[in-house]
Picture 1 (cartoon, rainbow, N blue to C red):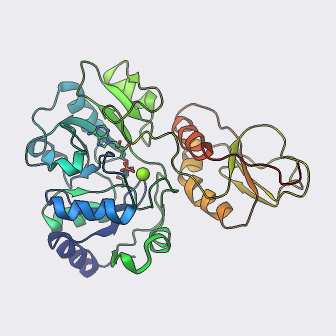
Picture 2 (cartoon, rainbow, N blue to C red):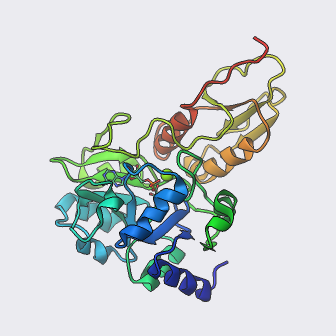
Length: 322
Ligand code: TXA
Ligand code: MG
């Protein structure tokens, strides 16, 4: 529950150049005044995020987009009209007033108008756009509750607005319009199919394309500290404590020390909203290994599988007995 005073206090903190934890419908963000380079530098410091990874700039109203970018192509305009406020970020050529630190030196900026009312009230009250990555340490699992944010940063983050659990649960879809044709840089809360229905064929970038194209698409990301394997195969035999992350309840439960079911009715939207919280719970169980089951790659399943593949991209689990 958030009170108006809390939002006003956080908005003033933003204006003073401080950081705030804010709810959005995708994940919680770690926000700063996007037009204040020094304030934005604090985000990189607190997150331990490399400076080559650019941030998304959040606005309160779709009409604020032209104040940050040089031009809005027709296709971008069609998408924001359809999906804003919502889980979509568009990458466009930036105006000079957007500091280089926000965009990691790129000439483009990612902009999003979130749907969460608290985020929009905060940005509106601050009177400036807010640059915000997900409010987790670099490469760790994204936060979908205010508690996750508090656990992560403790008293290093004074202002955290609690807007309840995130409705969407995976980050925004990032679409770039800086090239000749629109390119999907990150699958997310708006599905590929939904985007193509508005603007036609969409190119997908393959895995990490290097700093110039999609710096945030790091191969290892969203990772729990417990080793995670993405497989429909059997858990390893032996004494290992194995956790299971699965869409539907499995037939054989006894082999797992802990099970997280994302959506027993197989709803990928529900699964996305529970994904990061479930991963976090498994990560606190002192498991030797988390086995994640693949989900169907349609709709939000594409974003879920993207996150699971990156979460799995870490030092491999080795059976200590072998
Ligand atoms: O849902 C979300 O997008 C959340 C909430 C807080 O809004 N934010 C988020 O931010 O996920 P972050 O920093 O974790 O991810 C930002 C993504 C990265 O993949 C980054 O590379 C990409 O956006 N990005 C940002 N600016 C870009 C640019 N100018 N060109 C290409 N990619 C960009
Ligand atoms: Mg992130």
